[in-house]
Amino acid sequence: MNETIKTLITRGSCKEYKPDKPKKEDLDLVLQAGLKAPSGMNIQTPRFVVIQNDDVIAKLSKMNAKVMGADIDPFYGAPAVIAVLVKKECTYAYDGTLALGNMLNAAYSLGMGARWIHRCKEVFESEEGKALLKEWGLEDDVEGVGFCIIGYPANEVPTQEIKEGRVFYV
Picture 1: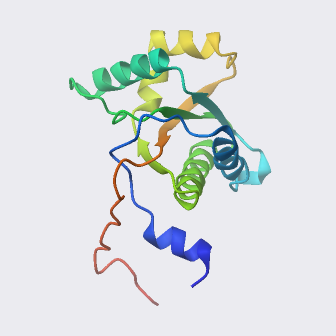
Picture 2: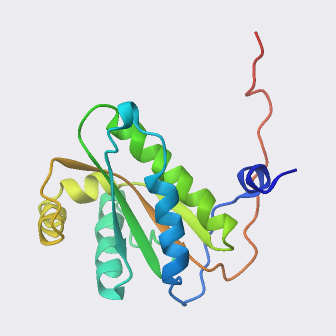
C-alpha cells in the first residue's frame, strides 16, 4: 500500500497533545497541503490564520466553548490552531472543507496529531470574532469553516472503525 493511501485510511483525530509547538517547517507543509486543495473554478477561497500565541488560543477556546454552551477546552490543549476561513464566493464552504481535510491528513503524515473543531463560523460571526478578523487584516467577506488544532500527540492516536453499510455499487 502506498504511503498516501496508508495515511488516508489510518489517520485518527488527536485529543491529547504534547506542549511543544509544531516546527515551522512542519506547519508550512500542512499549510501547503491546505493551499493545494481543490477549489471550485480554482478561485482559491480558503484563508488560514495560524495561531501559536497561548493567550490567543485560550481566547478562541473560550469563545468556542461559549458557542457550545460548555465550560471546557474544545481545543484539547493543542499548542497550535489554524483557523480555516473562506472568502464567500463560488463554492467557498466546500473549498474550506477540502482544505481542512488536506491539512488533517498532511499533519498525520508528518507524525503530528490534528483534529477538526467546529463552531468557527459562529466564533467569527460574533462581535469579538469580527474584531479579531479586522485585527488580523481579514476584512474580506469571510466565513469560518473550522479550526484545525494541531501538535505532536501525547499518546498514540487511535484509528476509528468504519461503520458498515455506507457503500453502494449501482
